[in-house]
Length: 144
Image: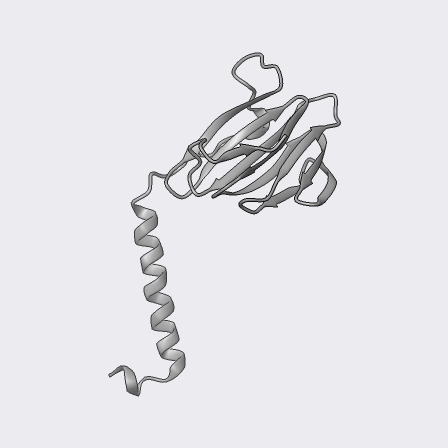
């Protein structure tokens, strides 16, 4: 039966089956509700860095992180981190590259790449940090 079908029909069947697989997998996850990160504040006073976990499962963990001064040079052995700047400005180092960051910027930090942040604004740097796979806090290695 399949051998007689044109190649385009076979591709459509494959795409349909793949989409059904994705939808069935997504239906087993607990759905999320919208999170308003722009009006989110830290739970209390903090010296330099604090965070709130927004979501976590075996594939990904998402945090809102506030930084007043800096995040020392470190790397994640088995995580890729995506950082989306919500408020503030800073100088960020990723590997050998150093650059300014501001609200609206997105930075991808591949696993095992050293990175750091030095805040340059008077207000704390506020970012969304998306780490994949799930971040359990055991693969952050400080390098300074």
